[in-house]
Image (cartoon, rainbow, N blue to C red; front, side, top):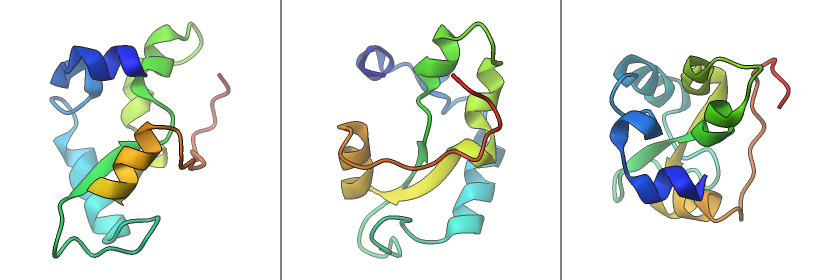
Length: 98
């Protein structure tokens, strides 16, 4: 995951091609799924529960599945940072095994 984050490439991170999925997750979750922040004071991010890099490194799953709504959750910036550091974990509802 750090390799993708270090690259900072929106295409690699999935920001460029999947705005519809991001909008649907925002509408579905509405608030940070960890702390309940409603986003009025901070921006809410869409987080991949299984990192995009995991999909790039796998021979058994399609990279596009990384952006499936079952692999996305809405988090406030603070919780998203904690998730990125491995301090928070979320279950993906994808039916793939890695």
